[in-house]
Length: 404
Image (cartoon, rainbow, N blue to C red):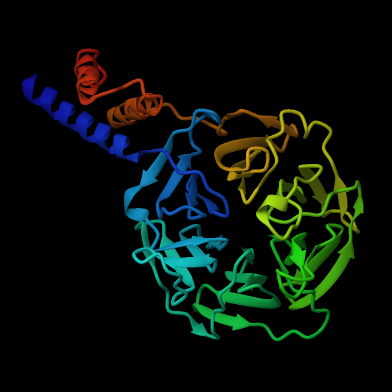
């Protein structure tokens, strides 16, 4: 009995240590990236002097006011970056991080020597892929999307004050960068927009700012004037959306639902200084891409229990939930670490998240992990104050038969 007891004690303490390491309190931020892989919502970079990669476990239920973030210790980014774009490969194995304000993680100075990084989720390793073809230009405030051939499309953005209207593509199979040669129907230079690709291959660009230079003669894009890029023909076209009145905006988010609606949330007006930025109305709206022309609508309950006015956040769709993370709170004028949940089926803001199915733990190690997460939550709440108290819990668990 003694050896098995010691063995399980060793396993439990090891798992406990792992969970304590992965218990993470992330700094507040905006202009970050978020990607969902393998039931994990991964968050990284933003306007914070940290390079950590961390996640929220979407296989478990949670309350948005009681979050158990987990750190991936070996997943730290090779650079500090904000206002970049991140795109997930078709096989959900690789994140491509492109552009942004990049700073050396040792000297903190701006470093644009490498503008594309990739993260291998299976090995938890960042690398600098060798990119052939054209020169990758430094860009900020752009959005990338990937088509069903594995080609990433990145439109416009800005750098050193200048806005752009070129269309760049990264072919993920050959690691080739190309600036497409298009002269017909070119849009005005644009940044701070959202981008979603429809099943027919059309990319829908909404909102943002347009002009030549961010310091002079820049205006908000009329949110009813939709840009469409056909990835099959490499052609631009335009559509005037109809429906309810929606404020134009920048630094907002959008997700595409399975039934063809693009849900936008948050954002801000344009101003020469951050202090001059203002909120927009409504905070949430839906664009029906099944109709021709597209049509805006405002869900009747979308203002009930709505989050505060934020921008620079991120949004991801996971089953029935649009998950909003972090961002800048215009009411408090501070960065946020809050998570908000919008149920796209009931069109309501909710405070609790439930995965489609929760499997009960089947192994003893799963029990230990569950206990570890409980302890992690207790530490976050500062209910465990020292190592002695943790060992008292270990001793208690030893006598409860959790490993029997």
